[in-house]
Length: 296
Image (tube, rainbow, N blue to C red):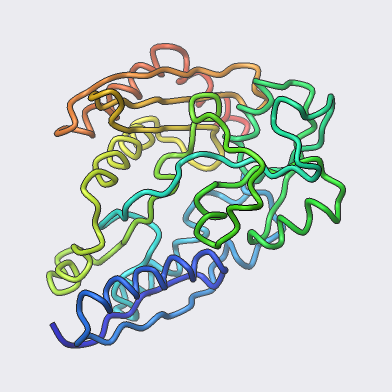
């Protein structure tokens, strides 16, 4: 298939890595096609110092890109869901200034993260931690670790690995203790509906197993109607021959963490996602979500 495919991307180092990954895959599979990357500055980029919990959700990073997609300025975007790439390590990574592992961090250690999900689970495990907000790209956060005298920061392991910074990881946290975010470590490819030409291109980027797992996680999130302002985690995988989903909802202070695992049919991942959401609601997640909505 000849022609040009235009990929929309934010300008951060990690976003461009993701866009270039898609470009390389498409160029390799369709050498006769020209693949270009268009950098789009989003509201989230402009509000680089604002805490994520105050920014109104993921649309601050996607609205401008989705607008460009709908207006036919780009053909696909590497951030949401049309196809899902093979998944990288789903875990959260601890990067400590002195090389201390999680269990060795001292009392009242200063830990920085941009995620309420991470904050809640860290405080649940270690109520003595002093959690501080941190923003910026990966390099900026690593620099702040040292410049601001933090004891540790928490980042997605996948981002560090993709940028060739695996050696910066002190320890990857157990994904049951710190349940990942829905879709973490999977790259989603968003396209226009009914655009068969582009759909044929992005089909080569899709990983069936990751698409299944992320489908269950996103359905759980959709059913709970949660977003960036709510500490929610979800991790689907095949484990010991079973399709298993671990879900988590918590209060930001970590005093209440509801965590559950269910097994379901791998051919119907959305059913498992909905079942998990209903299970969490039955255990009290609806009260947490309602209280957070009132506070928001």
